[in-house]
Structures are given as structure tokens and as C-alpha cells.
Amino acid sequence: MQEKKSIHGSWASRWVFILAATGSAVGLGNIWKFPYITGENGGGAFVLVYLLCIALVGIPIMIGEVFIGRRARQSPINALQDLAEESGSSKHWGAIGFMGMLAGVLIFSFYSVVAGWVLQYIFSTASGALNGVSSEQAGTLFNELLADPTTLLMWHTLFTIMVVGVVIGGVNAGLERATRIMMPALFVLLFVLFGYGMSTDGFAAGWSFMFDFDFSKLTWDAVLVAVGHSFFTLSLGMGSIMAYGSYMPKRASIGSTVLAIGFLDTLVALVAGLAIFPIIFSNGMDPAAGPGLMFISLPVAFGQMAGGQFFGTLFFILIGVAAWTSAISLLEPTVAYLVERVGMKRSSATISLGVVVWGMGILCLGSFNFMSDVTLFGKNVFDFLDYITANIMLPLGGIMVALFAGWVVKQKFSSDEINLKSEALFKLWVFVVKFIAPVAVGVVFILNL
Image (cartoon, rainbow, N blue to C red):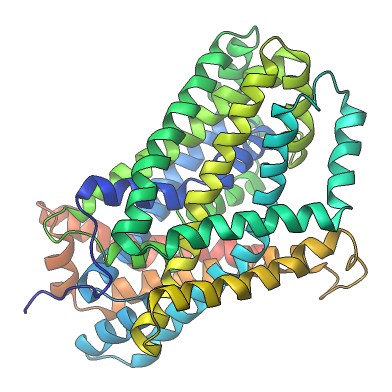
């Protein structure tokens, strides 16, 4: 078969793809959510289960997404349709790609609101507004931010423009150029903060909290959280990795590349925990503070320690960069589809989509103020979109991708594309993607409904 080429271009090298895909995977989930769910679920034992889930669920499904994208060299809907036809199956499998792309757009609409909070906190921390605040004052400041639609709109708009500005440049001038700058910056910021965490009195307590194994605290619910987070942290089920895979160089090994992405994504989550928990313990705060950890507990901690204003600003810049790299990948699959199927110029497609998600974001930020009384199935717009994407669309998409890669695509195609050196390893991947990954994600899907 003659090798297909993407009309959008391709990554300059395997390492650029690794950085781009890691940028997609590394977001608020790693640096904000992972530390607090570790805190809520008992520390080290949870981390071990999470790592097993990455190996048995995340990596196999990611390999499936990447090989589908690279073989078809198109956006998710077109890639799934073409590969289904090539394997003698129905074009209706393209619906998985549609659901994933829709999920990415819906996620962006509330993700950009949270990213806007982060931008506000960069400014607040750098200006010294959080110096010396108490927990009550930090809570009040955060609630005042949520109640102020004008400020939320300003930051949501700025973040949307930042993302559209990158995506509009295309694979090489936009995504790749941004990746080459932002990902090294993210790693530098993370390890500076890790070094800062090591210098605090609470580092030993933070280390013990993350890596001491207390299986008595590991509940069945914690296992479900680990399976779910291992899947969501790698940006699976929304077409982002499939789209990025379509730009992947043919000569690059999919297996080793995906392992590298999984390793870097997990490394960021663990190092973020080791940067955050020592600061929490040094200030006598609760490591299981939940979502408030980032916007209430940590600002209090930074505001009360020597050098806290500087390192607090670095921390929120780190979160902002991580949110930016992830958000880019949420829009790229739909932009690629509009260019391929509708024939739009990339600039027109990106701006049009940017306007749509910006408008949807206004509904999400309104959930905390002027639209707080508007509910869908008992939830405000923000929480409703968060719920249907995280609990329904992404896991359903992940299950269907696993079934498609394992049962629909001819094994000759997947074997040729993945090109593992060991036949036994390939058979192991086929077994996991056919049986273990769909069942594991399916259990989480059913129990979360």
C-alpha cells in the first residue's frame, strides 16, 4: 500500500510528537487533580494502582489511537471511516470520531474557564495580593472571582485567543513551534518547584504520603478513580491523540513512543505531587483538600512562606502552560476535520470554532453567577458538561476505540503499523485492547453513571 500523507503536514521528528502528545496529556489533571485525588485515596497504594492502570488501560488504548491516526493520515472521523472500509467494515465507525471531537469542544468550553482562573491567580500572586492571606480570606477571594462574570469573561477570552493563535498556525508553524517552547518551559518550571519542595520541612512527609503503601486506605472506589484518571490523563477518547498520530513520522516506533509519552505524563503527575505536598505539609494543611487545594490551600501556603510570592507565581505559570498545551489539542481534531471535509481554510476553521467555544464558555462561567439558577438534570451548565464528557463521552469513546482497534481493524494492518519487534508483545497488546481495556473502562463507565 502506498503511504498516505496528511494534508496538514507532519511533525519534524519522533521527539516533537512525543512532546506534543505529552503536552496534550499533561494538563490540569496532572498538576491539579492527581495530587488531590492521591490525597483523598490514601497516597502510595493509590499511586501503585494508578501506574498499573496506565500500563493496562491507558497505554494499550493510546497505541490504538496513534496507529489509527497514522495509518489513515486524517482527522478522527475520516480516519475511522477509511480504516473501517479498508478492513471490510461499516463507515458508521466514524461516529466514534464525531463523539470524540464533540467531547473535545465541550471540554474546551469549561476548561478555558478554569484556565482563566489560573491566569487570574498568576496576576494575583505576582502582584502580592495573596501575601499573608488566611484560609478564610483565600476562600473569600476565590468565591469573589467566581461571582464576577466580567473578570471571568476577560480571562476566558484571553485564554481562548491564546489557544486559537497557536492552532491557526497549523502543524509546524503553530502546534510544533509552540510545543518546542512550552514543553521545555513546563519541565523547567516543574523541576524548579520540585527543588523548592525538597528544601521545605515537609518534604519527608510529602514523600511518605505519596510513596508509603497503606493498603488499608485503598477502597474499591479508589481503584475506580485510578482506572478513570489513568484513562483521562492521557487525553484518550476525544480524538486528540488520533489527530496528533496522523502527523507522526512513519519511521517512528509507535510502541516505544507511546511508552515515552506515558512515562513523561506520569512523571509530571508524580513530580507535581512531590512539589505540592511538601508545601502543604510544611504549613500544616490538609493534603486531601479536594479541588480547593489549588485555589485556596496553596495560595495560603505560598502567601505565608519566604519566597512564596515568587514560587507561587511560578506555580501558576506552570499550571497555565499545562492548560494551554492541553487546550490546543482539544480544538485541533475539529479544525482538521473542517479543513478536510468542508474545505475551509485553516484560519477560517480555527476562528469559527474559536467563536463557538468562546460563546459556550460564557454559559459555563455564568454557572457561577448570572446563570447559577439554570440547571440541566440538576446540575449547572459547567458541572453538566464536565459530567457528560468525563463520565459518558470519553469512556464510551475509549471503549469503542479499543473495540475498533482490537476487533474491527485487520490484524495485518495494526501489526504493520505498530511494528513491534516481538510477536508475543503484539499478541499481548491485542489481548489487552480486545478484552482487558474495554472491560476496565466499561466498569468505570457503568459505576460512574
